[in-house]
Length: 578
Image 1: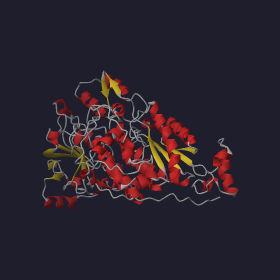
Image 2: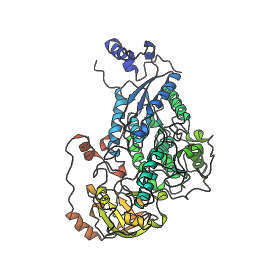
Image 3: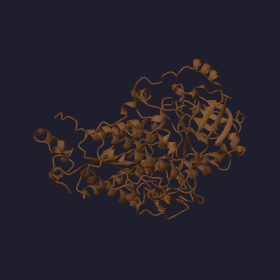
Image 4: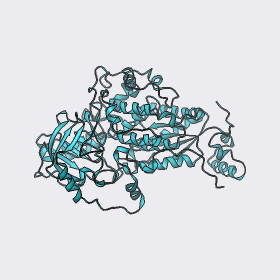
């Protein structure tokens, strides 16, 4: 270990200061019972925790923080826990995505403003993981992610139940009379039966895996269930490791390279991960100056099969995935097939290839081999272009109906998700199985915050007729736990004058996923005439954070980050005012 009395550590600008300033910093810390010896120059490690009872996925993170502290003390560091926002999609309105950027700002500024040499990031629900990574990347102090882990498998009447995914299924069963209100009420308690985030391959599980694939989380740690004792072992190991990272000066800028992002994109395809990873990875890349375009998410996954058989694309859940070998087994399979870069360094100080060398696939039903995949190559996220989405749109092929991936049908347009829900159960609604439901004004600026509303339930009359899927097109997002033939992130969004704003009932919409196209079969002259008639919606917000958001949020193809947050701002010690 290096000399603890070294004055070169960032924290020593506070705790090693002479005179009145040093006395102030040290004396106030000692009111918590710290002895003078902890200010001897040892690494000061911040433990950023998004624990909150208003974010059920993150509610247990206070206990995870205690495990991290043990590891920091073991390695000779000084652990100091501090709270951050918790952007839980389960309760926040209008959407947690509205607050991802605010949380990223808070994490960045808290790290920079305080006497920290490194930080452990404790996250859970899907927006907390990218927000923390974005904030930490912008400061560029040594950082390691510890996600809180998935819930145990849901169990209902002898079947596995997936959080989120079965919400949609049970809703359909309720509408069609296959389930009573009482049965549904009972089932919801079977769906979430332990601490942790969604145990489907929704966005929370996806982003935990993506953080590991990027090299920002310890190998294997994404999948341990929240209540498994090895979740706490992982947290303790992260506490030990961050001290070593400080001594090695291993910063996010050394880990979050172009090759690391390419690995994460391919891993997301192999696990059947969420489309939300596209937005979060793009935003994170913008923080570290890595050029990452929307088309990269299409090009890089065409050769990658879906290896993981998990809901919503498959059968199993995260607990099964963990015991089958977890993400290291998937990465080893991809690496063996030449589909990953083995050279990027990770938080372990070792490379991807070194980390995955001991990995073992235990259950080939859950994690299939590369030569006999769950779904063939090219079934991951597809990026679409056309006159309806000139800056792109995405679709999750593994969760869509194959027969609808090529489709032409008349549009039925709704100016908000609420407008659709108001008539969705009307038996006289003018739709059939060929109709393309268009939901607009659900983008970053238009809603605001780009909520997870794109996979609206099918009209009740079609569900009762046995129709299980239809094409839906929206400028919003979809929960990673959702499924269906849903075109998402249509860009530019309707609220800023994107072509989605020009669609009218009955217009032919053409979806051609193999050809990577989404277009409106209306001639250019007619679209130009409609554009002349279009007026932008009135500004709804004149002050506060939501005004700031609507004024500065970028479009989905750029990660829906704030333009003024792109790039890093570093970790220079702020001036001393004492």
